[in-house]
Image (cartoon, rainbow, N blue to C red; front, side):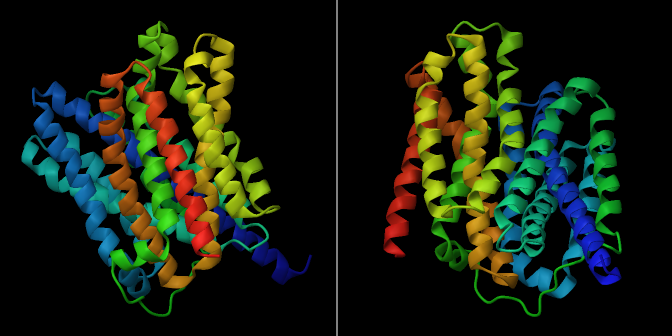
Length: 385
């Protein structure tokens, strides 16, 4: 291998390390802060209205960044923005337990939402910039696996450090600061953008409607599962300890099965694979009531289902990365980040209502959502030729 080729390989490896650290930190920021802050506010004697209003500030932060990020990244640069976001997330996490005035937690949650959106969008864009068309699906699969690792780390930290005091916030902040070491590596090649892309969030949504739908679906089902899967299993007679492990089984599938799905995405028609994964997710959700009668079958089904479902998002990211470039891609990913927030809000509300109507409401909600996305993807694909 020549010196130039060796340097290029090291640069790509360093870039991928930066992306993995950034993606993992986004997942951790969301999964850790959402549960931790809610529990902390409740322990201080505050009601659901305050908890909900504080959580809404995260969404406001996402909205603000989604509007300005395409122009901001062209002016400031990707690496600087990622470092600023990681520092902001660390400082905000440390400030929550340090500030006794609860009203200050609202601007802190706003900052955390803004930082999370930057990490979410720019990690996706950076991953895409490191990919060739022949390996794009596998690259995006590694990205979504890193994202899932971050989501899994949040509950793990809380189970080890507890939900009270300074420790869980400090651990989250330490992970954010450690991630900076990967991002600032001089070997990590930074994507460059020549000019801001014209147009607002609505324009980017119209450019990639299937991607927006896939993002809403992913967020809605993921947050619904985090909220209600254990409750659903308990209602069917599972012991509480075993029921709480089901989401972990699903997340492990989401992590481990992304690479084979990414390999398929580089070998076959990606739109057909997208529709097939949506069909598998819809059909798989319908067999949950039967699977939950047997422990081994349950773990197997949820493992495969989790991988297939998250694979929808992996392949959708790959398709978007193939079609769009530069700050236009940043704008679409920013719009997807906004849609993720909408899905995360709608998922628990709709699935909770479905579970009030019937014991198997979570199953029917997941199956209906995946089937609706599948139909939309088919119709949109025909319309686009």
